[in-house]
Length: 229
Image (cartoon, rainbow, N blue to C red; front, side, top):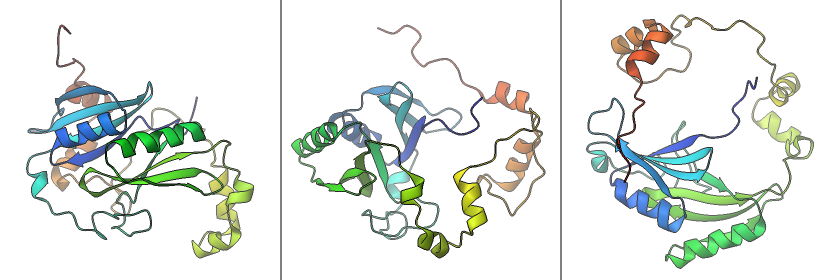
């Protein structure tokens, strides 16, 4: 059984105007809209999914008053592939295609909608085009013809810049398999580890709920349309 992610199921971006995002990623990027519904368990939220392939989707979330939150380049958004943004934010997003021909086809499709595109640029490990999406998204489309070879692309000098020792690099390049029991009980709360930003009291109650009860009480399985037309 795989013990690592096998891909990306969906990427979720916030929108003040979900229609603007759906139009861009459908018409400009060519991703069909496959789902749009009230966001499960989130009052006032709308949730859209656009298909990249049978296993990967692009998701847009609209919540009340998001359009009133200011975008600040250098803080909330990078604005370019070389720009800074706050730690934990998405610096840029690169979509993938299989061939150089598909990369050029994507460049031409995007430009045909009046959106400026830079590239392709050859990075050795991949070739890329760069452009902007709605609400200051920094976007890329890239292609790699072969798997990235760590022997060529992990620079010892940059390991040192990142504070990664030789032993740590060895572990990071070949993560140990998990051979322990299943299921694993919810760990005790440790404030030094990453946590979701729910109100503390509500979060602690959520952590105390048994998995099977959480699954039963918080799941939404029925599609919003009973009888598709």
